[in-house]
Image 1 (spheres, rainbow, N blue to C red):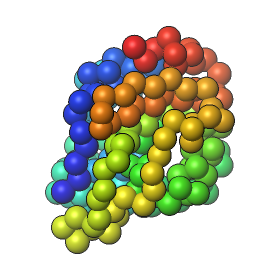
Image 2: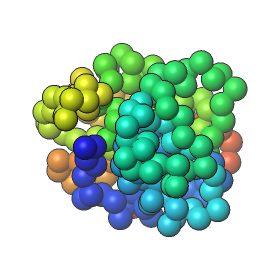
Image 3: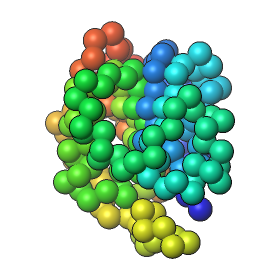
Length: 179
């Protein structure tokens, strides 16, 4: 079963509300935690989920939380060069990619969004869970990985929450919003 730590949920929800996003892309939706947060914080927003595991879509009824559910690997988004979205959420998912793939994904998304919200665990080992290889942690992340971006961070060990300014116009600086 996918697990996402809850220590920073209040901070994430405040940030999500402050974005005033009209469109949200939740990559690695899992059990739908961030979909539920977005439904509370941005009730009028259009929510799209990307989830690699078809069983999770059924098991967690993701179609009830999101207007659209894309069952595909996150890296398949790189084929959609026309994509634009106000807020992208990578909640406990970036560590499930090889570092080079995660960085490619971030660099792609920064051009196509106003904000990116990333949550990842520090020093938390995880192999496949319940037979799902996609649950294995493949890379270690630290703040130096976000150096090319304008970002703000909140840490409550073992979780790190990073907000990145995307390149689409109209967004406020994340340093003023992630408090």
